[in-house]
Length: 141
Image (tube, rainbow, N blue to C red):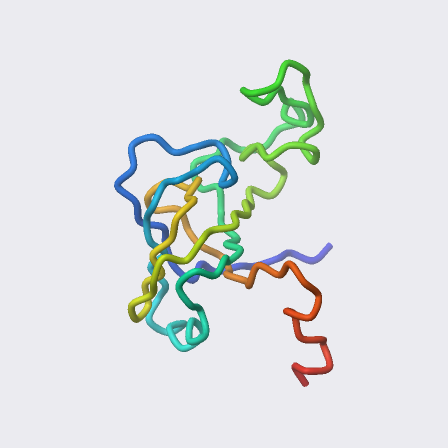
């Protein structure tokens, strides 16, 4: 079996004391501070757009078989881990869709955070709604 290695590209910064359970119910503002060596990759991120942020649930407890089913705080029934947004997962990876407020250098100011201060960011992708917004694989050759 092949192992997967990832490295963080930056960290979340927020002074919010209460972090919502999901980005879709969040108005929390903060910033994504990206490592200097990745700054050029932020070139086309603009205020007003939405971005998908892939991150590591660094505060999550280690996954055990007990977590295959869980009862989310806003639900009554136990559900399978792959049907919910719990941070307790076999691979503690999260995803949020955030609104860009503005960008300065290697820092993206965002709204909709559901991540703690210091959360490691693994990747940023465009939020694609229409298929014409995403270039084909052929365009990347």
